Length: 505
Image 1 (cartoon, rainbow, N blue to C red):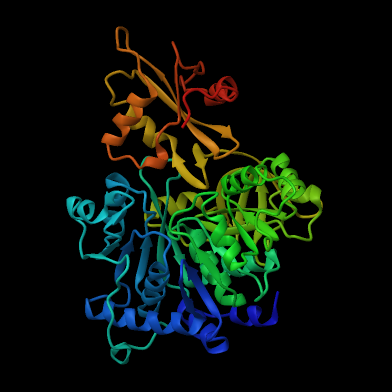
Image 2: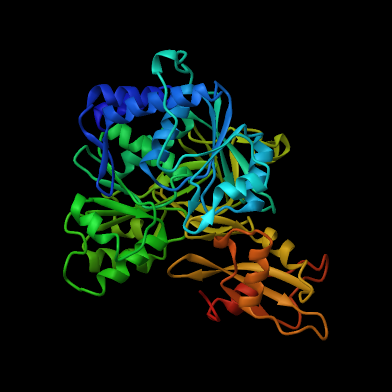
């Protein structure tokens, strides 16, 4: 690791890290978006003024502030401002709707909710008032500002819980994952070290900043002192001009991003898509080995993939100096300080980047073993070189474009549909998404035939987030079940329908 980055990695809090980077390289660019930019010095100053404005509104040390905002410079500033105060942040991805948002606000006891107003045709402010959110304020283009001299001293310790992230897990309702500044700094530090980043790099954040990967990436920028281009919405080929204009050297996010870049490259074989690009990197979803080889061969860039989750944002990561075999077939190696233990084929974790648990104490007790290792529910093995190979998941979770989706949540809603007798929701392999959501249903006798459009319209009406909607519908006479507890045998459904793509979107 770069010596300066290693020293900054010892910062106790995110705010301390922001201050130390601003003192080191105040005039270096930190954030780029469209025609706008902020240096590290300007980022620190804006965060302080916004912190003062939030303080004037009643935000204090320990106040829970939820924010549901797109990937914008203002969102990063708000994050830094809340870190300056020592508030507890609860980021919500912008495509959460009534069900998920209201649950998260209730569970976290949020005192404030920052929203973007009308964004991509959806009125977040109206939804916030409809679900009874407290302290609603819009934070899209304008943020509250005040006099920083009125602020109390910044938080000195990085070990109290200051972040509540949300993951679907295996239950219907999201789970609130508890993180500290130190756990996020540890994750971002390990990620940057594995990728061999330098101050000369130009990164990019094309995924929702409210994802835990957003905080990870921010920590990387602060440790290594390089800028990142922010994309409020991401689509190819539209984004390519921005990548080229800013000379982006590292991009990615998840398997879906690699696939999109590769598809664009195939439109102009032999011509570099982004001349400065040297690395695609990400995680959050399975990566087929053939995708690695295609990216390296056709795009002429390196591809490194890793393993992380909301509970532990950085577990393993491929490194540019790994062998092609390891980069293609493994999830990389764990960084120093991350312990991996395989128990009966299941991956367990211990280290500073591991979360403190969940909002619900019973959930926390169930996920840590007697030695303090986090039980992931993922299956895997370690190679002789220390690389991790994942072989499956015990959790009934679908990972679509890097986002966890609870099958049970969708099943519970489908069971309320009058045209559904039984339902099973599964994830099927998908080259573009990692996995796609497939609903397999039995219908009552005499019911009108179901269609994918009809099912998705019904689920939209329940307030289910758009990214959770099924992209494939299969109607069967009877779901396969075992002979004891009559449990649905989902592996048989995956075997049956993995090769079919019917009415996907």
